[in-house]
Amino acid sequence: MSGCRSNHDDRPADYLVVGIESHPIQLDPRYATDANSVRVGNLIYNSLLRADDKLRLQPELAESWRMVDGRQYEFTLRPNVKFHDGRPLTVADVKYTFESILDPTNQSPKRGQLKQLAAIEQTASHQLRFHLSVAHAPFVEQFTMGIVPTGSLRGDTPPPGSGPFKLESIEAGAKVTLKANADYWENKPKLAGVVFKNVPDAMVRALEFKKGAIDFMQNDLEPDMLPWLRSNTGADVSVHQGTTYQYIGINLTHPILQKRQVRQALALAIDRDAIIKHLLKDSAAAANGLLSPISWAYDTTVPRWPHDPAQAKKLLDAAGYPDPDGDGPLPRFRLSYKTTNIDLRRRIAEALKEQLQKVGIELEIRSYEWATFFSDVKKGNFHLYSLAWVTIMDPDIEYQIFHSASMPPNGDNRGRYRNSEVDRLLEQGRVESDQTARKEIYRQVQQILADDLPCVPLWWWKNVVVKKPSVKGFLPYPDGDLISLKNVTLR
Image (cartoon, rainbow, N blue to C red; front, side):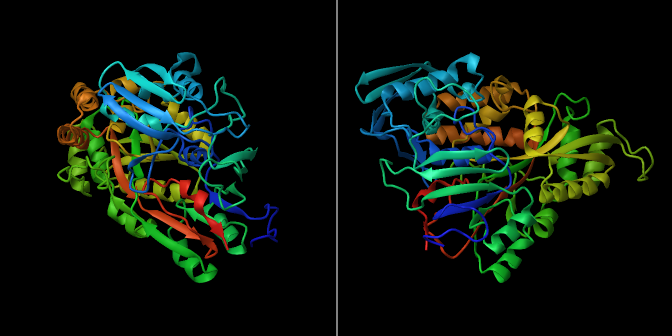
């Protein structure tokens, strides 16, 4: 492939073609929330710190950094870093990026994550200090925010970054093309560029891989295809432990779903192990909550919800929804379930529908293309839906998802969950700097959420990498990040 164009499409020479299932919605890191926007954006934008393949924070734009005390962080920037348009990256750009997120008129979904940030002070030509209003242990994770140039406004065209690749073109809904940044401060990428090709149908994506139009895929594949890909395409297929968390989101303002017994019945009615075995072909592990065993804060004693239809029926009876026809055709109640129109997502939805039907819950499946589906989720326009959380590092992500102050647009509490004890613990976890004490706080949070079920845990996805043998040097990350594409070669 090296040095020539593919016969299968009009890819530029020495560009890697990555097949993805959904088009990135918003690459600007201040507004990116969907997985592909974040992953593609991480190749375009540098941040002060970056998580490595063990999810440990390492300096990126920061030449050095230190926590002065619980409320102050000091960074010294690398010299001679430039944005893709040639402008030098300065302290002013870092300051502007964070302040533009905090500006309420910009309506950044990440504003709530920065509310402890009181001021940013330039202390030397390449040095700046972040001042927090209160001690906030997980704030260091916010230093993984991609940096944009001063004055960058929200618009259709993402601002330039300083990362290993620069944005070459966007064909709406079809592909995003990145070109290697020849002036990258670390090392110029070995690839000439990367094309992220949006192929929503997993079967079509696999066939595109077979004919050579796609070189690399990570996740979002029909599990049934993996043996076929191994034997029919000569693909390198590898499976790695992951942190991506699949769950069923619940609208807690719904008169039926606001009852905890109903939510618990949903959890008991679902046979995760059967879905993982038969539909997912063991490419996932049953989950009992957001935090996976990879997290330092994971609590091994958090109860799991077994598959127990009989107990689910008892809970529904107790909640005031008796079986109207004694195990007959009439449902206790009906709910809608929103998902994307990806084939595997629809098949998972059908399996859930069949399992819930057995306890008397009728599920109406509504599938949409990605942008419409995600828009409805953010607006709270749903009964039930399923999504996955990616890039889970600090357990403080639970504040963003479950604290009552994090309802959109201030965070991602899309189900409108309210629990004063959870609020109190999540606030406590933010100001406690001792990790042992923090672990105890988040142990309590995990126990409450496992019982209260503001969302129903499904599974943690394993990371499945499918690539041509000619693709060398890719290092998988637990959160599915693609940053190591900067080190990939095509032989």
